[in-house]
Image (cartoon, rainbow, N blue to C red):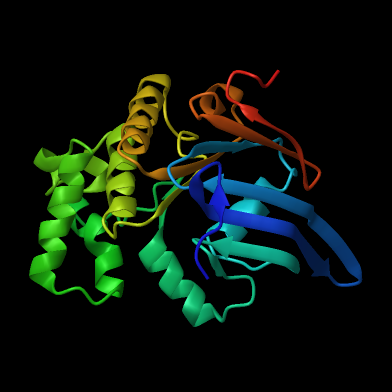
Length: 239
């Protein structure tokens, strides 16, 4: 199946009637209660909502870290709702670049080795891994920090390493989960500027945040509350 068209561009993400229910003993909690979202190739979208709104659950589904209880999720035209874990792992490695709040860098490894890690899992030869990792670090302005370990870098630089790691597999989608949550204001501006550069270069970016100021950097903002989409508007139009 080819990706469906949305506003003249193909839809990278399409969710229809997505529900997610968690069972804890005899108690069931419906984290998502029927989500319909479409995100086109090259869009920069922020998903915002308070604690308990369903953001984390939605992020896990978008990132193929979990699957819906009900509904349909298409990623780049492929229905991934019912895939086996091995198939989801391949999609995560090849098609999605993840950036997390906690950076998730290996403390004893250099920036270069941290960036190259997804290529290790993909079976890319060592020489090619190093070349691609160096290019990714250059793209985020850290070519001169390739041999530094995370503890030798600032918070903003560590997040840039994480972004380089997300880029090294040349994914179609960058999924950033609270990427500025552990950063000061200067580093936040730095990282958000990098996301804007990546978007301007044609990347599709989905930014999940609880911070309205951070969400405003995106071109479109989707608001979640109690497991439902309550608002979707261009940035600047959210009260």
